[in-house]
Length: 163
Figure (spheres, rainbow, N blue to C red):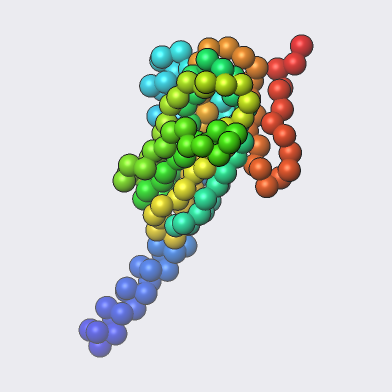
């Protein structure tokens, strides 16, 4: 009887854990809390890219960059994401910068040496099931507003700051 009760309680706990939803609001708040540091240093933080994915997922997007401008990509998470990595590649598929630290957040900063685009890849290295993530983009130093594009959508990044 005692063994059956323990089994029932364990199953109930597993169902409660599985029934908990991912928290995109938490991941966005987490990313913007990281962005406070960069905002205080003159970076304009741009809208986030959000999603829900599990271990091994790779999310890529294209961001236009301008020579001489500083950029930061910051990834926040909810409690289900355990480790994320960020990679930034130039137009020749050369690695510009990466963050492969073994922690639940990821972030990189670099100064663009050219005008064009970069491909940013967020890798969900470890998660408990599915977890919510959010990437925000920071830019310091002028230039048009940038809107990231998922390369799978076939679209192009757009300048929404047209006069």
